[in-house]
Length: 432
Image (tube, rainbow, N blue to C red; front, side, top):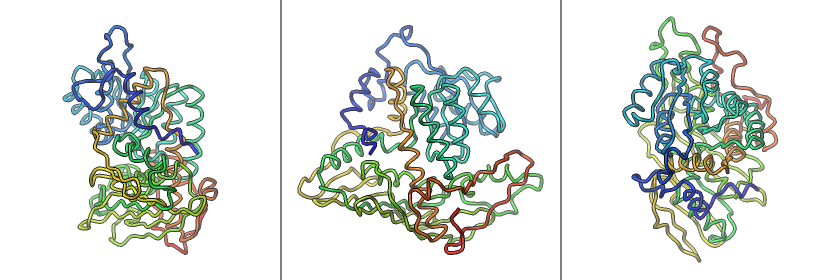
């Protein structure tokens, strides 16, 4: 299923040729061989001006000779200003954001989409992603969409509708699941899908890191600060905004797992998880262990931990009937052990840059990439694991997809109280 989304390295090289340059050579940018007057300038807008958003905008500006940043949006003015200053230092000739195109507030994304941009970069907390993505595609914009694409099943269902709308409109939609754009991993999975390790029977992945954004004590909250503002400043610690650490961070390793199984989705999941290190105010777990069952009885095992002072490990091993593929992540170059031993010895350029290079190359070529279905499926697979850990129950794919639990509040404004649900209690928390 969806095997066409596992783009091979040969397909990548063909696509990059359309962009006019060797993408791993920093001095040669896609489109650099074309005369500026022959290529229309693409205007981009950034929604969500934190660190990841600023990085994505910088990579977009490097992806094509004729790209300019013309609009920015964030709920906090200081975030926008800091990002704008950083981007002006990086690419002063390509940052053309006038003061009237700096949009601040909860409706800032709508104003940006209506400001005349061609491509929208979405990098807010993921709880907002379904609404922002829907608005961008409805307005006919190409999109770079950070992972994950939702924090609950209603959000995923909305995204699936938007993905189809983007396909019908022939709009590019590139997901921030960046490992799919890494040449080393592409080469490994191409070998695996060609049968180098036989039939894939099991996947074991880890996402063990320190906390992304530790929750501050409640005493640090100013007396006049609203629920929404406090939660946005500490968004990672609230499940409606981040989806929990498993969904927001370990989703990368979940995506490796689906890639290994040629983007088949799991039939069910069972999991354990909890909060071992206390934190005031938030409601996310700090560890998970999720076991997935795939068609034919194959298994996927995922471990996630975000606790300080512990060993970090972000890697995976894929077990087949004739060998295993290893060393995904930051630990080294991928290799295969078994009857068809192999190791990757090619270039390993910045995957974050490649995803933007390919996005804009596809727009220029009139063959827009649409990662939408697999980004939605990967997100739901992660949500499915969280559901299993929160409830202590077996959760099937259909249960997860059709869940009626909506984490994102129906009314979001600066004054309306947003109570925080308590931590889930496996065996007591019910599936909805």
